[in-house]
Amino acid sequence: MARLLTYLLVSVFVSPLLAQTKVQRPFMFSGKTMGTSYHIKFFGLPAPHLQASIDSLLEEINRQMSTYRRDSEIAIFNQMQAHTPFRVSDDFFSVALIARNVYAKTGGAFDPTLGLVVNLWGFGPEGRQEKVPSSSALKSALDKIGYDKFKLNTKDFTLTKPYGEVKLDFSAVAKGFGVDKVAEYLDANGILNYMVEIGGEVRTRGQKNGGQPWIIGIEMPIDKGVPAGLIPVTPGDQAMATSGDYRNYFEINGKRMSHIIDPRSGYPISHNLASVSALAPSCAEADAMATAMMVLGAEEGMKLALKENIPAYFIVRSQNSYIKQPSPAMLPFLRKEEL
Ligand code: AMP
Ligand code: MG
Picture 1: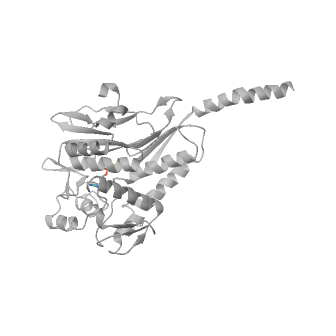
Picture 2: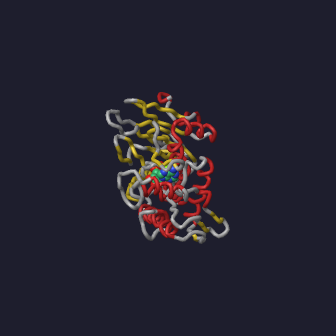
Picture 3: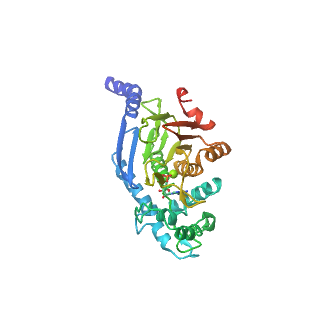
């Protein structure tokens, strides 16, 4: 009886405490995906097969959306003829729809049909060439772009393109989508306090250390002579993605040629916006929106952030320093000293 009582007392009073202390345990793992690295941190119970499952989930996204794989769904679609409906996987179709939404919202600044142009500038799977493409090649590629010319059939999950040569490029949205898939996987497995990051695109949920909010950093652009630093952001149960011109670029006569292309001109962006970070409930949307605002530049990008009430943080180059411009919707997620 005494033993039973002790057992009951332990199970009633101690077990919940034990469970709570267990919930506090941090776990961390990282790996490689989508040509970059990922990091996952969570608080919860040990989950032995989690990393293997997440690795295969990310592998599946690569198999669908990597333009660097000849056998990926996107690569096969890109080789298809015009006007032939192509049945894609559910995830691929979801990304195609998110992309359509952001394309429409941003007046085509985000355009996932830029593959041909991205390749001409040497930022695609065909490899780096560090030269300006011929104007005739650019013109012929620009004539074929425009996501509104693609048909997305929601009844049978097919995509149809208007020209055989035109190529989809989901690079500005796929990392964010990968973050969302991992986050949803963690949700489904009862892990409700986590931070998921792929190549700088992040989504957080819940808390860390049993009550502290997750804080993620916006990196200051890495330009010569300007000190590095991080701007702390508390996103809550949201995602943050950043697009910048300071990591992937080459120079011609001192002019920066960034991997972000303005679909209106077919040229790499040329303005003084160095980076922009956007918050959104889904990381895919944050990722695509950040790229769109990067295309638009500080002024037009801020107009879009105001119109759509997007929390966004613009870092603008000015001589040997930077001007930090948060949109009004971003203010609640920043520390007071950053305002
Ligand atoms: P991100 O780093 O998310 O801004 O994505 C940049 C990548 O997206 C580039 O390497 C290109 O493959 C592709 N890209 C470039 N310009 C655009 C654009 N205007 N809209 C959509 N994707 C783009
Ligand atoms: Mg992006």
